[in-house]
Amino acid sequence: MRDKILDLIEKEGELPPLPDIVIRLREMTQSLKTNIKDIAKLIEIDPVLAWNIIKLSNSVYYSRSTTAIKTLPLAITKIGLNMLVKLVYSLKLCPLFTESTFLSNSQFWLHSLAVAIFAQSLSGKIKLSQEKQEITYLAGLMHDIGIMAFAYLIPIEYDTFLKDIEGKDETLFDQEQEIFGIDHAELGALYIDRWWDVDKHITHTVRNHHEINLDIGSKKDSTGLVSVANKICNSQGITNGINYRGEEFDEDVLSELGLSTKEIENILNDVQTSLEQAKELVSHGLA
Image (cartoon, rainbow, N blue to C red; front, side, top):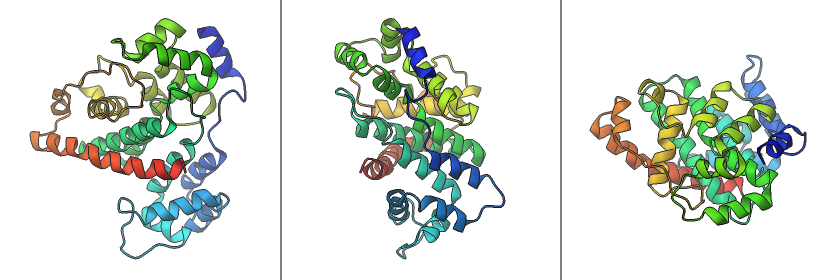
């Protein structure tokens, strides 16, 4: 089965590519010659995306003003380019994959977005650079993409697999390895590396987000932070919707990041905020 899956990954058209508007936006935001007006023109090509950006810019989580925002250029100015890129990634990735019998798109992306938002919050608290914070967000957003790839490439086999593992004690990735010869972390990394042109740190994080033996130093990069955020979200019931035994979370890992007891308490409270933000994004992305 592993060989079949790897063969499918290599075939053009078997998996959805990164949306063109995401690629073009990333290129534009990295260019010193690009201005807000140019970016607005790009996003206006997709009226639904443009309207959702305006609506989100007026939300309690993303607006910095009490004055209603009614135009796309103003929305972009208010939320900033870094936030814009994250919103566009989030809104365009959510609808990419069809829903399987045993996998809910909305719950899957709710978990992915919560992990992304929470992991970035952690990266800010330990004072990573802005660039690393952005990478951490996108890595969190994509960390479980291999699950969607499984459901997309071999829908009948993966639906049967999800039904059969319900309630079992073994971890999801161990059972995937046993049945398919590849787990969703490896599959997601291979898929992203093949079809999505993103920072290599993102691919590395997706591949290793279930790594058990992370040392203290490694927890201070995107891989460690996404791993921690994923386990915390799972422990708080914010799961991807697959009914299997999750990895246990040890709160001591937060102290290993150099965070005080008070900061740890605040971080655990932040999970709920991350969930509410994720719900708002999912409501737009899957509309």
